[in-house]
Amino acid sequence: MRHLAVLLSIFLSLVSCGKREEVTTEETRPLTMRDRDLELDVSADERFRQGRQAPATTVEAPPSPVVAGTVPAGWEALPSTGFRLVNYRFGNEGQAYVSLSRGGIFENVNRWRKQFGADPLDAAGIEALEKIEVAGFKGVWLEVDGDFGGGMGQAAQSDWSLRGVVAEGDQGILTVKMLGPAAEVVAEGGKLRAFAEGLERAN
Image 1 (cartoon, rainbow, N blue to C red):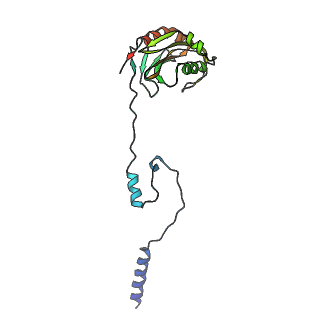
Image 2 (cartoon, helix red, strand yellow):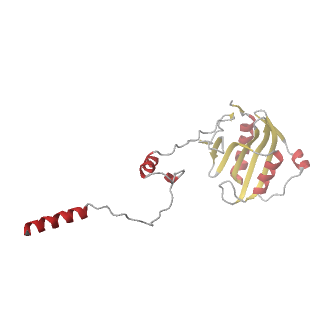
Image 3 (tube, helix red, strand yellow):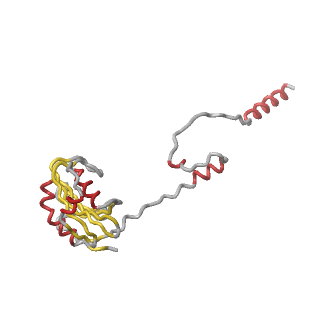
C-alpha cells in the first residue's frame, strides 16, 4: 500500500506538470516596418507566415539624363540624384547642376532670387533678362549675388553668388544652376555659360 501511494503521488505530479496553463499578457511593443500591412484577425500560424514574407522593396532607378554635355575643365563629376540629373563640384564649395523643375520661368527665377533676399521681378523684369537657349529649351540667364539664405539642403552663407539658366521646353522647366562662394562662381561663370550652351538632348 505504501508503495502504491508513492506511485500514485509520482503519477499525479507528472500529470500536473503536463497541464497547459493559459497565460494572458498585456505587454506591447512599438510597430516596426515588418508590421506594415499586418493582418490582426489571423491565426498564429498565418501571422508567422506573414512575418517570413518580407515586403517587396522598390528600388528607384537613377534619373534618365535629359541632356548631356562635356565636363568643364577642373570640375568634378558627381553621381546624379533624384533632383540633379547632372551634378558637378568645383573649387572648395562651388557646385553646378542640371535639373528638371516644375512651374514656369517666372516662378523659378523669383524662387532663386528669393534665396538671396532679392526682390521678385515682374513680367517686364523677366522679359528684360538675357535670353539663352539650352538643348532646345528657351529661357533666360540669371545672376544673383549676396547672402544666400539656404534651402534645398544648403546652409545659409554670406557673400555667395548664383549663375544659371531657367529654360522652358517640351519636358517642362530645365535649370542649369551654379552656386557657391562669390569668388569661385565669378571665376567659373564663363565655363557655366559655355557648358549650358553646349548641352544636347540625351534622349
